[in-house]
Image (cartoon, rainbow, N blue to C red; front, side):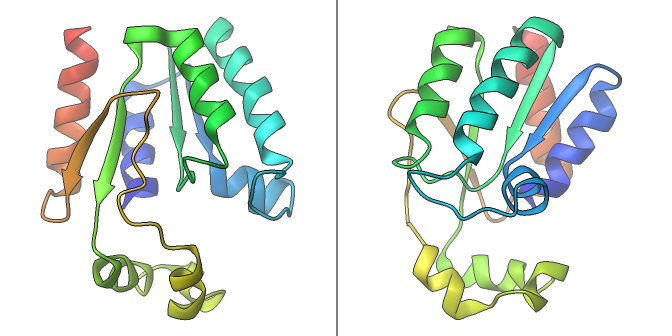
Length: 152
């Protein structure tokens, strides 16, 4: 749902909205592993700097392990300060598996792989997050985020 949501947000916000998808960068562009030493981290740092200078809105999307991606969150806090918004979908493992099974990626990896990666309540410490529950629709989530953007 997060990928679908960010694509809806980018479409709504229009031109000059930079969407950085961790999966696209890591898996498609770099064909790289995830972890502390992922080459995705320096690439994201560079893209965040560029996005900050060039785009009115930058959206970072993905399942970003808070320990591994700490330099990313620190850079976001440094660049954007209080102008940053972060959202965390609080989903049970069972809900995560159910949602995953509706995606094309479910053919690439399944529940066993998800279980190895699963981190419950992997909250950030550097950036305050708004929690979204499983029962929040795409439309509702989009409206909340857009209202928060417009309030800034």
